Image (cartoon, rainbow, N blue to C red; front, side, top):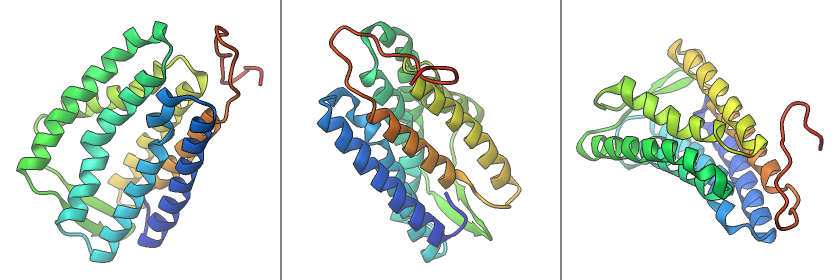
Amino acid sequence: MCWSATADLAAGTVIAAAGLASTACTLLRGRPRELPLAALPLLLGAHQIVEAVIWHRGGGSGPWTTAWAVIALPLLALWIPFGVLLAAQPRERARLAVPAAAGTVTAAVLAHALATGTVTADIREHTVGYGIGVPFPAVLLGGYLLATVGSLLLAGDGRLRLLGLLAGAGALVSALLWRTAFVSTWCAVAAVASLTLLAWSRRPVLPAGRPPAPAGPGANT
């Protein structure tokens, strides 16, 4: 979420454009298994645009608010870990099955909660608060973080591990600022994540059989 409807709309447009670019790069480089992860910014951009509509509608409940919650909760809990799993090398997939399993269980519980309850949105000056009734929230939060941030941190590619660090730190800062009703910075985190995925999708195609070079602090580029 961003701090206003205009910011949400602008951020969503830029993030979606980054998603189009990363998806095109992945297709041009012939990496179909990486498409779900490369297309993640498209989902994040759509999420921001949905929230811009919620701002304009003054919050409340309804299909737009439900769509925001579906993307934010069960869909991302599945999309990210399975995207990382599909993009991984065979030797990495065993450990990545753990966050994928956590995401499956977490998404199932969240989807049931959304299907049987009502999601509400409340405009709070520079933030939007969402009311979502879920059982065992601490357990679900742990499963959600394991599925999303955890899958990125367990990835073999250093760029994806860096993305996991950025997402984890950004989510913590955004949550702290949101709880104080000061301003939400999640759209900035989503933008940084999208640019990181764009850089990841643009990496050169390696010859067959050659392992990817590590990426991150101190790595050669």
